[in-house]
Image (cartoon, rainbow over all chains, first blue to last red; front, side, top):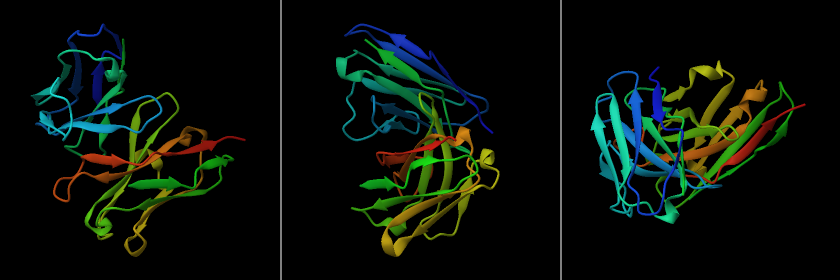
Length: 106
Length: 119
């Protein structure tokens, strides 16, 4: 099975800061990597698919990069509404697996 | 829209059947999934079933205790859970594939239904 290691597990930043989250796969997954946002008490929401492509309506301050085993999710200018937990997920091979999540606080 | 039901409190060793009512899209065209989240924990993919009922897949950790099924005529997805254990306690989400082409893009998600396994 492919293990996804996400860091940091929590992150505190200020409005306007640039924040980055990294996700490492235990083997090469090409660009088969998605990012989700889960706001408190809500279901997760797909933000970025195929490592770099935006879901419709996702603000341009969000971005994804990487391929192979190393991936990065970034928010260029943190906003109060970005408070959430963010997860990466690989879909190169079943069982699909998620990172443990990054809880973002302001 | 995806609306789960059937969660609740069950004793260890018991059974529960979750349902997911889908609307607003051509249900039989999409692979569907169950994904769970233990309280305060991360996400775990549980099972998937293809649109035509042709393929089903399960997480190895389930050890054959769960069965996924669907009724395309009723636009409904199900998860039969047997021999439940405390570690199965979680919110269970019904999730659709984003597209009919690629698999592994989870979108949208239902609101989830809580399963609690406790004596």
